[in-house]
Amino acid sequence: MAYKLIDLFAGPGGLGEGFTSFNEGKTFEIGVSAEMDASAHSTLLLRSFFRKAKKRGNERAMLAYYRFCNEGVKHPRDLFPELWAAAAEEAQQLTLGKPEDNEKLDKLIAIRNLNGEKTIVIGGPPCQAYSLIGRAKNKGNAKYVAEDDHRHYLYKEYLRILHLSKPVMFVMENVKGILSSRVNERQVFHDILNDLTDPTLAVTGNSGVRYTIHSLVTDTRFDYGADPTQIEANDFIIRAEEYGLPQARHRVVLLGVREDKKYSGDQLLKKASPLAVEDAIKKLPALRSQLSKDDSAKKWCEIVSGLGRALSKSANAIEDLAGLSKTLAKQASKISSDFGTGSLRYEDPVMREAITDFERWVSDATGKLKVHLNHQARSHMNSDLGRYFYAATFAAHYGRSPKGHADFNLKGLAPAHANWKTGKFADRFRVQQYGAPSTTVTSHIAKDGHYYIHPDPLQCRSLTVREAARLQTFPDNYFFQGNRTQQYHQVGNAVPPMLAFQIAGVCESILKNSPGKKTGEDSHVRIVRSSNATEECA
Image (cartoon, rainbow, N blue to C red; front, side):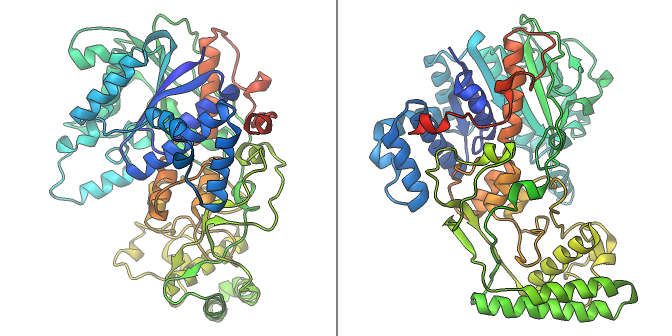
């Protein structure tokens, strides 16, 4: 019997995807997931349908899913209403903290017996109130009062579900900023640690089931009654690039293990060589950026190549930039109108075979996915096209992304920001270089692409949703719903499924009560899609 997951603040389902992918879905399955955002819930619901069709071996439902992906015709909900209804029962659109939604979730947990020995709670409360960027924005708002920001207290909804379900284990994820966030001069992280050790006490005032909070990367643990000021908080940070992901994503992850569960604390994530951006996205179809007005391939080509020549000429006038000037000119001469701009469903003439473990993880083993999903280039203003072309060329030439006013001192490159020369936004334009893991993919990618410039100057654009999803390790058959801005939001806010898969391996090892065994030592824990995935979906 599989462990049932209660997935809170689920987003598009990154944590749930990783857990349910582990051991071919035989160890963990989702009992209920809760997400408030409509577009993220649509993605979560469609993925739930896919997962259920696959698990039940429903060939016709699987074909309907792939036809919808490939052609956009006949939504699966219309063809398989019963299966869709089952998916909708699992993936709930709920706003935690809203009384009627809390009541609905509580009833579902009770009806489905999601409590006790066979239940695990996963998820992460919204992080905007804790993130360093969010706090910087709030600081600039004279009317902002931290104590009045309900987002600081959404973790208490997580506590309430722990109190209600008394799971054998839980996984809670959040941004690094939570470690230094304060409300009423109290350190939020310390209060969270204390509350998580006895959720019932935190919710009702009476003591209940207790938990020990563990790090997944060190032997650090926090027990009930311990002094949180004596804990090295950074021990709870997982640096994703150290565990084989193509992204330098640093997040706080807390593993709570019920006190009555014997656990020695030595099952940890197993380190692996980092992947680079190149490993994740280089084989995806090349796209050109679009123009904000009157887009055409010919016009785009003329504008970008013209900008490149002008930048080369400007650089040539500066003695120290003679080498860069030649590289700019060379790249400008290669600008071509051959690339398309992509689309929600973008067909690649050559669907390349998976070779590496990472490619096997993200690729669709069935061979039924005939298009690249969510792979569409953004439109950019002409001024930004020049900056993107310059930045990508600079990064290729010098082996680093340009930084601040000093590296953007050519005529016409500096943006019209009053604080541009102060250094506060030195990395406003950042190239994600092929030879290293990307920087953290965040929801900011929905606003503009300045932090996420593609490393190929000839494409002159920011990353697509699919490329961001690759860096976040979502499988290629994961179809993000909503408009493109909403898709970016979902990807940026998610937990990388491949990291969640590894966390699931640690959880399974603990549940099997096998002290000393680290994730990765059993063959079934390798981060590869199962070899019989085609049979399951056929």
